[in-house]
Image 1 (tube, rainbow, N blue to C red):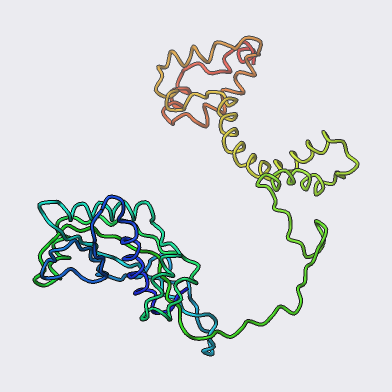
Image 2 (cartoon, rainbow, N blue to C red):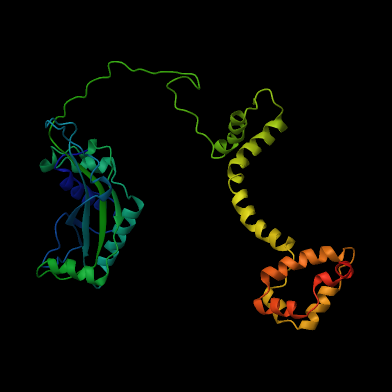
Length: 343
C-alpha cells in the first residue's frame, strides 16, 4: 500500500514510461509533460498526460472493514482503492502526421508494457516533490488498460476543458492504487493455547449420521411386528413380515368392513328371499270366476285342506268387504272340496 503521494507518483511514472519507449519509430525530440492539454497547441512535438478523473475501485471498496472495534480501538489501517483515468494527447506538425505517429507509439508502449515497471517507479520517485512517496514498496502493481469512449463521452470530456481545441488522444485507466491510512493498529493478542479434540466415529458429542429418506419407512414393519407380539429376533423373516402386514392392515380395515357390508347386503337378501304376494286390491278386482277357479285348483303335492288354511287368512285379512260378501253369497269356497262335501 502507498501513502497519499501515490496518485501523483503514478502520473509521473506514466509520463516517464511513454518517454522512455518512443524509440525507434520516433526519431525526433518529443516532450512528454504530465499536465492537461494546452489552450494554445504547441508547435513542437508534445505528449500530454492528463489525469482527468479518480474513481473508487469497486472490487476493493469494502475490503478494509471493519477498521475499528466497538470501543474505538483501531484494528487495521483503512485503505482506499482507486482507479485513475488518464487522457493522453499528442501534438505536432499536421502535415507530417506527427500527432498520429506519437499516439501510435503510446498505444504500442502501453499494450506491450501494461504493468508499471519498478525501475520507472523508482526513477519517478527521484523527483523532489515525490521523495516521500512509498509507491515502490507497494505489493500491488498498477496496470493500464484502454478505455473505449464514444463521440458523446469524448465531446463531454473535451467540453470540460474550457477553450481548449480538440486534438487526437487516447484514454487509459490505471488500477489499482491503494492509499493507506496513517494510524497504527493495536496488535492482536496471541493465541495462548489451541485445543484439538479427536473422537472416534459414533462417540458422544460427535454429530449424528444423517438418516437416508427411506430408512424410516423400512423400520416400520419391524416395529409393527414387535407390537403385535411376535419377537423380531426369534421369529422367521417370513412370519415377521406377514404379522407386520396383518397388524398394519387390520386397524384400518376392521372398522370399515361392517358398516359397508351390513346396510348393502341385508335389503338385497330380504328382497330376494321374500315371495311375491298378490295384493288384496288385485284379488278384489279380479273377476268372480277367476277367483273361484284359483281357489278350486289345489296345488300340486299339497292337500286341499292345506290350501284352504293358507288361502283363508290371506283372504280374510287382505280382502275388502265386497269380496267377503261375494264369497258368502254363493261363490264356491275352499271348503267345498272333497273333504268339505263329506262334512
